[in-house]
Length: 102
Length: 470
Image: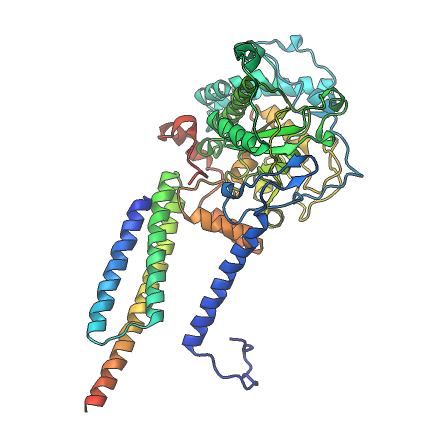
């Protein structure tokens, strides 16, 4: 299980690095707090998966489903906040770029 | 951030920006983590000589939130302390081989029969005889014939130890060769080497935790200390945890099976370790006295509200065996993982106790509550006769308090590590953690789920032997 979560974390980290470099090439910087919120969201989702698999192995089904639900929701909310903040920041950057070019 | 609700901020401070706030929060979190790590260095003492003993470094044994202390977390007042009275061992004097007729039961006025009175004890045993059969006939969940059969099977080696019947293990010990019989010199090495070696052997032979403390006559039964040879300066404590899946079905015969199996494993591990030490050329004998304080001094755990050891790894679900030895071993020190403050707020063990035997006072006390309590320590004294009476008349050994303790957990899910660290470092959150524990369904299983145990795919002995090892 630990291995699966490590692989998932690496895949997500690799995906994030690709997104970051692609955005950097376009001159669109992702702010540090967006990275932080996205990382916390990812950790929360992974913790939810760990709780689900681990607690089922411990024969604690109620804890498994409640834990998964709780951490997954927190993780998704953090991810959504990060996405919205990033979108707002991107919009702002594009507007200022347009204003400069005009 | 410091603004009072409903009042405009009157100071000249500028509003805190989102960036500044997140940066401050990050620094704060780093400080908490850093502080915790720094406090952990307090336990980094290596082989400190104290009196005639050597103390060992065992930082690798526990997570970072467990600290080694010079003094135990239970306050001890030697001026008030007394040696325990063997005649007040409430668990002694009750058991007879199966099939013994009631009129053939000869009670001595010591142990349980001495405390309750012989007539009352006789009556309680008759109630027990009837209760077991009644539980089976009624089909009480966890109390079927199969459950009782499993319990009695699990208890076999335990009976051979605690009741000294029917097997005398000296027969087996006779086959263990001493170095003298082999014609070689006995084992020699440093106390640290001896401690590490005995710990490795103890775990291999069935113990989950092994700790070492110094012989102290105050923990020996009255009169017993005079018979202990002066070379027996060291105490080895073995802790064996019960099968959580089984004991969560307490109070029932099925729950008892988990508890009795742990005692049996504890006994076989202890006897095997005694054989190991004999084969090295040294001697051992079981400690004739109180084992809980010796386990506390050996850093196996802290003494909790239950009046028993709570291990930071296995929780309250551990059984003990203490033996004296003349093999010089490096000693361990007591530990602190915030249990005293946690138990003060938690009280979950007392809530599940079927006979109100667990002390529910907020704070521990110096004052014993019953004749079996040994004074001289500030603890939550247990009303042991209440516990013994319930278990006896119901033909069940209970252990619900051990199973319900929030520290009694597996470690497969990583969240337990986070919760344990929070409980240890922020015991003020104990009530919240206990509420979460209940909400998530931890603790005793409902009666309706007891029978499902027979369909679980459990490992050997019903335990995860890798717990606490990763």
